[in-house]
Image 1 (tube, protein in one colour):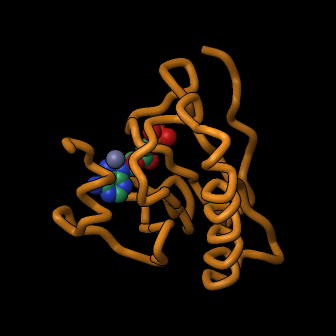
Image 2: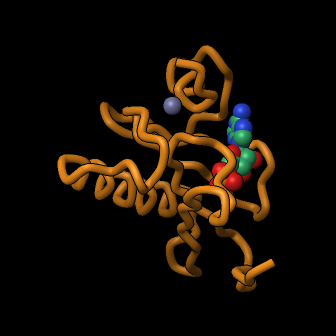
Length: 115
Ligand code: AMP
Ligand code: ZN
């Protein structure tokens, strides 16, 4: 599988791991846009939200529960943070393996505007 995030999961490519269990993996974004910027991904290769199946419902829930735990670990729970999943070209998705961005540690401005 020629997928950069699958290689990060298998540790073929190095990353700063912050969380791992049997289904979910999380690591620091290499180009952080805020003091805390973590990517939470399923260990199973799924390209995008468009490819999710009913059977993945629990997995998606686990990604969000993992982000809650990580937010607590990084001490940003109380102040708040943002979760973001980009999908496809117009959504700005660059890596075709679902990833949930956990962004926080500063007051964040809204940034979602059409080009
Ligand atoms: P997206 O634009 O939503 O597809 O986000 C892709 C994210 O992956 C970007 O924020 C990149 O900085 C991040 N990224 C790409 N390669 C790596 C890597 N090797 N390690 C950590 N983060 C990465
Ligand atoms: Zn993958």
